[in-house]
Length: 231
Image 1 (cartoon, rainbow, N blue to C red):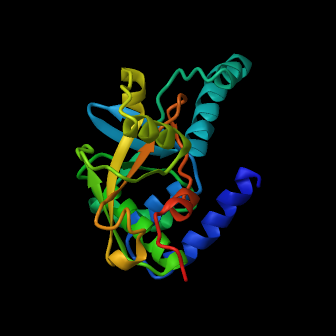
Image 2 (cartoon, rainbow, N blue to C red; image 1 turned 90 degrees about the vertical axis):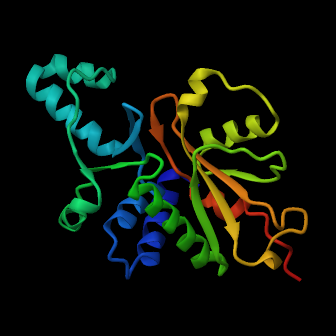
Image 3 (cartoon, rainbow, N blue to C red; image 1 turned 45 degrees about the vertical axis):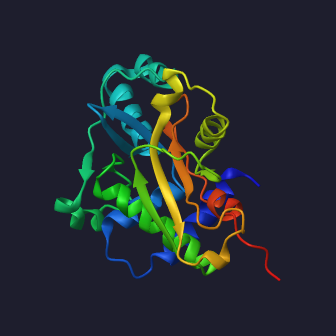
């Protein structure tokens, strides 16, 4: 299927999943399910901005300031100025609802930040909606597990990285830099899990690609959970 169709379908579904939420950070985190995010690594922090909005700002800045030459630089992905957007957090969360359709608020995806926890809650609700099972998703600093048995990449880049780590391969510095977040997924009921995985956590990851873009594929979580066969 065309990726845009999947994004639009995910948008419709996740909007219904969060119909009654009053948590602006959950609503913003849900945008990752259907909108690409431009990643900035800044002094140890991981900042996510809507990729389309960043591009629009860049076109306006470069084109407005430098005319045709500016537009050519934009098309070549050479940005002469940084794009400043507001960072959404608990303190200014109420402002999101008046700007949600503008997609102009950045979130911190760093370990320990509220937006990362909100993303975990959205993942839990996503699985509950489709599969009717309860899971708990928790952010991790690192995967340290000698009995690692199952993992799921939440995007194409993370899938490749987790596969290599599982096989014990060394990652070069460039690929390590692309890892944005790690998670542990636990099932509330062991009976829903395959016998060979029951009692073990499932590890998740998000990673950016070579263009510093995160493109979450929420269908990965649904298709790759180690669920027990239904009799």
